[in-house]
Image (cartoon, rainbow, N blue to C red):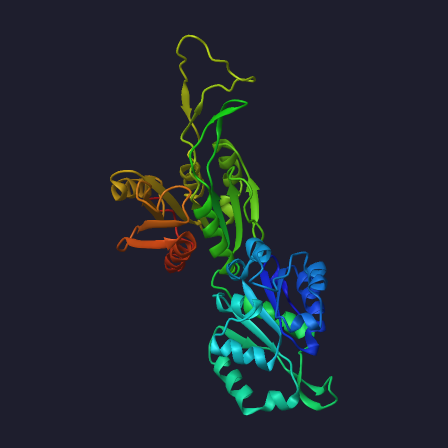
Length: 414
């Protein structure tokens, strides 16, 4: 049983209120052993069969049980859980849960987080045979199965907890794990490797002062998250942005432009896509003082020198390759945005560039939203706006339409 598709992926297990809830403990453990990061949500009824503490111990994370609890909502609420996950597994999916999921109801931690979840869902039914065979249950199952977002595993047949014999047993844990791996194994970027730069760089004058910019890395990390959800193996070369969510992809922490160039150039020849979204400082002080520079009475002069152009150097390095990565740049501008972006696209030999006017409200550094125009070597400019997650998803959809035609080609102008 190949469950490698679960490695590094984020799985929510929603536990319904049935006697089979105790088997969800084994499910959480086995998903973790397969390399997945697992979080758990429980209905109120599920807590009558298994304690949240059991799932917290097995998953290593708090369990969402009550979306009216300010502490739970503040730390890992139903919306955060939905945004975090790659796959949502409901086990056991009781007759009541199936009915409420079909109806789009949101009355507990499981149905509320599931209703906000946009990705694939795996349902593992478990109930009495009479309840499973009931016409209404079968109508609910058929309606959900008709939606490509939903897939079923089980139920199995045999002796049930109540003593009846027939269909209604929760599928064996190994089958649920295999089905979860299958649901995650077919992403459009499966088998692709994506290298992304994100955040600012810092160029130090002395131990306490540096040249930098206001970048928070939110756009680059949104791209990394979107690529990971599409099945790619993602590496992020990340400037100093503080504490951020980094599970599910490799993060290489750097500080200066030279650090970033070194890490990118050591990797760029072996990846399928390189997306340079970092805001790299263009200059650094010519010298770095070993101690804090004290203020003098006379004006001081600061001599600057250019830093490495990470994207240009990466483009030159792969220009003659038989199979070169798709090269994507970013252009944060304040005037003549498309003109400057087009010039950068041509000069650096890129396949696409994402341009935005950082003076526009909701599109600058540090915001949760963005407004961009994507320019390619052929085709009309494409405008995208919304949350940075939505913009990232739109950018990747556009890049996927470019990638097949560019795979294995020489660099533009080479």
